[in-house]
Image (cartoon, rainbow, N blue to C red; front, side):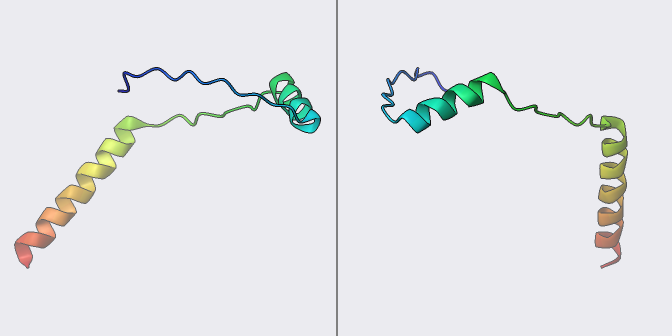
Length: 59
């Protein structure tokens, strides 16, 4: 984890950039977070591990 703080001033003088920043702040992006089924992922991982280990025994 970073311990240093970030503090830097940005000066924007371009009218088009300022308008774009205002537009972006007025309409934030929607971020969709997909739900994960951890039990199913664990079962799948154990199944793959068993398959890999059984293949290594026969080799």
